[in-house]
Image (tube, rainbow, N blue to C red; front, side, top):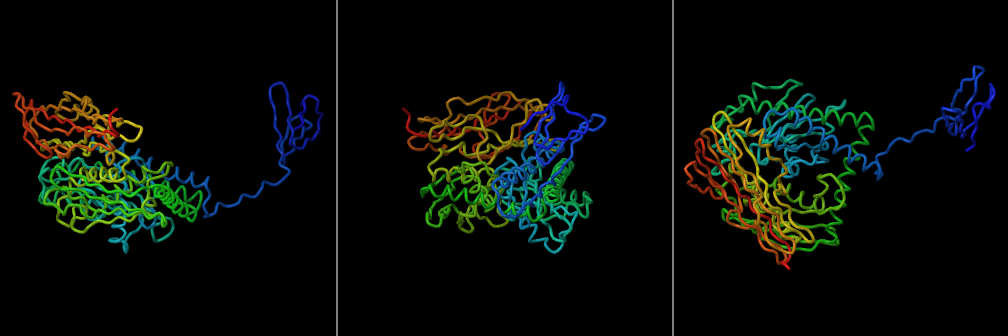
Length: 570
């Protein structure tokens, strides 16, 4: 590229690019297709002399660079939804513990992308969206928002309320869908916090919401929703809190709608819709590559209440497909450990996504090469009015451990969410408590972490003690609770919370009797413990599932399980 000194150029001089013009304080680059002219006033004027090359419109066929771009745009939209939900939520459970999930769906309700929120939510939400499409297809219109928590229509358990919003763009039929699912601190039921250890029917677990029209023509039907929350045999204890969180979910969905419309405005509907399909197809291919190196396996995971998860994985290398068969799993139970099929789907989606090396969104494409077989009327396919509150939080963890056991790639994690609820007529609180992760080949299990199907935080002690009449006496790692092995399992934790006024406290858990398994010669982790420590020093064991009335000065103590070890100790 030729270089010219501006001081040596005379008035009227013209230079065609490419060229560089230098002076004491400035360097001017003249690109190809441009010219520089020094005017009679010695000003430098740059003009285009060749027309701008025409830009080829982005097509609907897949382009690797654009695929990555859309992957990130879709995930970013879901993350922005999550930020709005967290910042505007009312309850500690959503605002501080982040017990919520947000995702985008195509026009048929298939999961396209999500933010890294709660796995058990994300894999099951598409069934909830499709339930709204089936039930409301003839009347869906712009300005409508729906709510549901029905475990028999894509829900998980009643506290998880899903808010679903259609995305319209100059067309009578929704182009896309967005949804947010939040765990409400109380939705009614036998005990404060809506996680009753002894529930036997869905009615005893709270208010059932099937396909409620939450917003109509842009107007929030607040009074009608409040009436729903206060109806039934076991109504919600704090409807104002529910309404506050529902408003936040509506706002989060609106952000998702805005982001999708922005993409349509920039690229056009056909391109955005095509890349939703390409994102799913890419995920399907990534899972098929996992199947290419997969070995068949079988595993039985026992549970404290006497049931079991039996899974057999068969691989068809020629078709590049796998069958996950749960035949042999326990029948539907009178207890509340029944897990709707949407939860099974969520677990399978999560496990196979973790086997993929690439950074892809969790979406329905991951399931295209997988055939899931669930025996009817089993623990994993309950029928109404079966109780399900523990199925979402406990049976889901057992299914996860069973799948990893069948694959032989990971020792058992703590296998429970250690669900703790307490409350009275004024306060209701819920949390899941971290524990030990299972070890794997060439890595030890992590200590004091939420594992697998849960991904929430624990409330900061300062916030917990400010918002509730409790004191956090202790929160420490339970040293030595992880299973020994060449790579040891992670340790659980010890959490002790003391009450400053009378309340009902409940624990819903697993692996108090059955230890998290070791793998390839590794040893199991220690089982957990849950008990009330009375102010006089007496101990009341709550077992795997139990509740108690506590007075001022009493404390609840939860010692969570450790993870299993991998490989024989050396």
